[in-house]
Image (tube, rainbow, N blue to C red; front, side, top):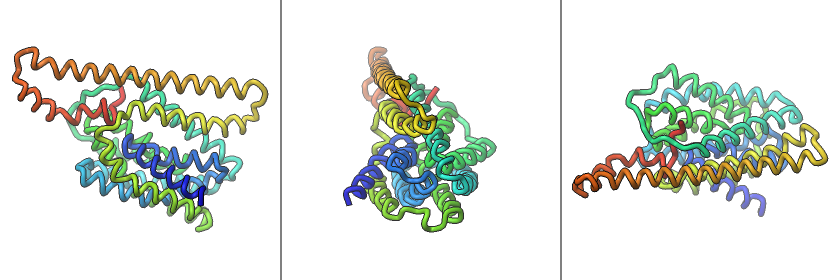
Length: 326
């Protein structure tokens, strides 16, 4: 019972992170299951089965808050489902010994990407235009495949690609990616069911992760507007890097002083990324404050300045919600 309560808490925290960053539910949950000794295929299968419920709840919540672009959802979900299905069948066919370092390597790489991405200064400018299907289709295919084989990765692949395009508001990127993930999680679960059978799903673990995620989903859809995603992304990336480094170091059979040295270097890199993220966040907020004060200093009425600030709220989310990377 204690273990299930811990897993439910993990599901809650993972969903809060996912709803605020547009990523990391699968990364966080799969990393914990791997550390607990669960086989890679079973870990990914259980997480994706739980995600069917959590992504449905998240999608509904984001829709109610107006965070979903249905055109993007329809063009990214089906290719994502195809990629996830083939990724699940591939992972199911690999032995546990071979799959463990593979999955840990994917999670480690995605965690390192989070560290680098959120440690850098973030831009808030956006351009107009619509995302084309020839961009969304391949993106969904690759993101779905990485998601199923790595136990997570739909958000870390899809969300930054949509953000960097500059053609969607950050909150709509997160809402659309989370909503499309419902289809991706369902396709991956079908692939694991075919490859592993029903015994491949750890149902008590699925239930615990699902309960925690369902509780957090509505709150996460609201937090996407106010959470400082830059700091959160750097913190989560470091946790994922350190925990999956354990599996990689063990598979490489590194002993002696090499192991603590690697851990120390990774911890130092994590700390540096968090410090850089805090500094970048402060600079962004300072720039926003100066920009808000500029119209008043130039003689623009305060009422007009306030109205302009409200109209530009979606762009400001790059500083306090999920940002657009350079």
